[in-house]
Length: 156
Image 1 (tube, rainbow, N blue to C red):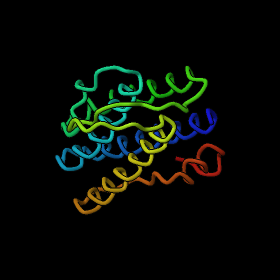
Image 2 (image 1 turned 180 degrees about the vertical axis):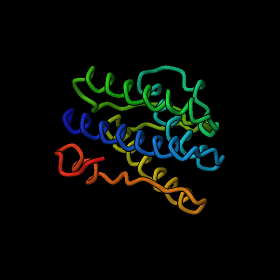
Image 3 (image 1 turned 120 degrees about the vertical axis):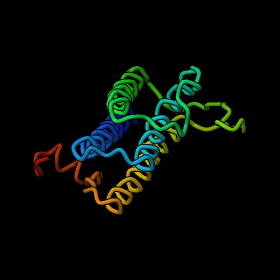
Image 4 (image 1 turned 45 degrees about the horizontal axis):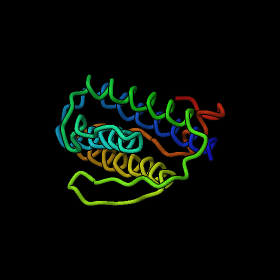
C-alpha cells in the first residue's frame, strides 16, 4: 500500500501545484476561488496533524489565504505528507478524533488518506468551474494527465 500512497500523494502535490501556478499566472484574487483552495490545503494539514496527534487549530478550515501564503502551504503540505508516508510501515490503524465541530469519529488512516486526495480532486474541480465562470482559464488536473506527464507522453 505504501507504493500506492507515494504515487497518490505525488499526484495530489502535482495537481495542487498546477492549480496554484494557474492562479498565480492569472493573478487570481477572487475570494471564492481562494477560499476553496485555502480549504483544500487546510484540510491536508488538519488531517495530517490529527493522524500525528498534533493540534489542528493552526489551520482554520475556511480561512482565506493570499496567493503567496498558498504557495508556501502547497509546498509544505506536499513535503509533510511525503515525509509522513516515507516514515510509515503501515497505514492500517484506527484514528479516534473529533472533527472541527466536535463530533467524535473513528476511521482507518488508510481510508482517511484515500479520502483526502479525493477531497482535493473534488475541490479542484470546483475551482476549475469558478475560474471558468469568472473569466480565468482553469488547468487540467486529471490523474491520467499526471500519468502522461510522469511517463513523458505529455509536456506541461
